Amino acid sequence: MGIGGFIYSSAATNLYYDCMLLKLLIVITTILFSSSSYSATDSQKRDGPVRDELLFEKQEIVLAQAELLVLDEGVKSALLKIKENLDSRQFHLNSFLFLAKLHERVGNNSRSMRVYYYAIRKMHGKELLAANSGDHLETALKKMPPPAEEALRVYIKIAQIYHQMANKGDYPTNFTPRLMNLSLKYYKICQYYKYQLPSVEFQMAQIKRQQNNFIEAINHYWEAKELLEDNQENREQIDMINYLLGASLISAGRRNAGAEYLKNIHQAKGVSTSLQGYANDYLDALSYEFTMLSATLSSEYSSNYFSLSETELDALDPATDASPSAWFDSLYVLFYYTSQSYKNWSYSVSATWNETKLKDDSLSNGDSRSIGFSSDLQNNTFTSFLLKLGYNYTFVAVRSDLRSATDSRMKKSYALQGLTPQLTYISRSGTTNFSLSLTSYHYVNVDTDPPIYRTYSLSYTPFSISKYFSPSYSLSYSINDSEIDYTNDTINLSFSNHLALIRTLSLFGSLDFLSSSNDSPNLQSDNYTQYTASLSLNYITPISDTLTASLLTTKSLTMPDEDLEGDHINAWTMKLSVSYNF
Image 1 (cartoon, one colour):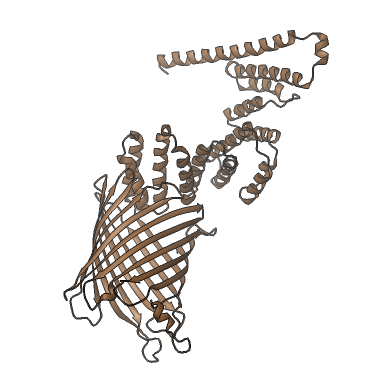
Image 2: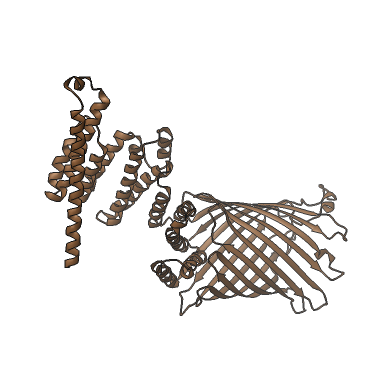
């Protein structure tokens, strides 16, 4: 220690002694003054509250003396002194808190915990101490009366100590999860009673992140962020949470969303230099390879499988015509791989297999199979911009005729391929995507050159406003210039929102508006307006975070142009899926 440090340390010690002596003097003076204010006769008439007050003041003197002894003679002398308050007729919380800190100081966390547990039993009862984490704890919390703030101080202290014990690494590795869960238990108690909520939510997120439960960690980070956002003085804490949100999103497999959060921090004004450095380091670390394989089994119902109008539906004969509704099952398999970064360049490839089979074998051309491949080349050179070039190819085959006894094989129907350059702008508020897709369809037995569909798209996704409102907006315009002198174009507007109901349950909804027009007199059926609403309920199963179930329902209404004869086309679909990521 240098001379300046020694002088500072000595001055601090002397100041501490002076404060403690002053505290001791004030307490003693108060007791002497109180004692001199009563005669012997008055002493006999004193009631219980007066005696309790005097006893409390004496306990404060003992506590002050013990605090002085820590610096003067050491922990052992302070322990002997503070024990004078432990066998008293009145529970003195500050003495027990001081005793617990003494045990912490010498590294005896088990004794410290026993002291805190004793304090909880005195102030709030033993029910929550005995309750296991989970449903048992929630049931016990509902039965217990609200504790005093002093008890909540002890609960949060217990949670902090367990978390520190888990992080120190002084215990066997297999004991660390137990310590983490104990810490979570006492943070949950504080969360239930809304005590120091921003700090509690943040610490719970940290623990969940250490347990690799990134989905729950993200939800807790969101809660902490919402609680802090009302006060601009919390800007630095919010920036830190945004950083941790980005890191957790990446760890949860949402690589692009996480990178957007981190880039937002890296370029933002007012963010601390160290935090920007952390974000930049994390972005640089995104050079690792990522591989995913997922499989989805689905069962889907369509009320109007052949897209019949209302007039056509009314004209169906139930005795001879097939039902307009249909059930079909599907298997969807996805393989995804993203490479390491090489001098700000990276690429990703994916392959898909989708097999669909109608449950009613009497329907023709029902079964289908598609095999797809796509790849992206991405450049991360710029802080505010992300450049990407994508290519995709999909091969589609259908069953020729299920009613045929001689030929029911899958036969190629068409193939499509597309090239999509994309520019993503990352601002402090969110991301804006500009893209141009060039897509061509190659149909079987069609000799003419396939038309090229050009689609211009603009979408905006703000950084999550809250876990209940995470919207996205998009606008696209597609045009097809045919060689046979007609033009077909469509405009598509879309709004979607992601709603996190609870940790394991989320809701995704979207509204779409599509307008299609065609200037060919022979293709006037392509002039229509379509409205679509969909709602998807997604559930993370308790078996594994990678096993999810979802229920999707979609309602669409197609309205032909007023100049054409024809009715509206109504369709409703329901799809139940189970997915597993390997």
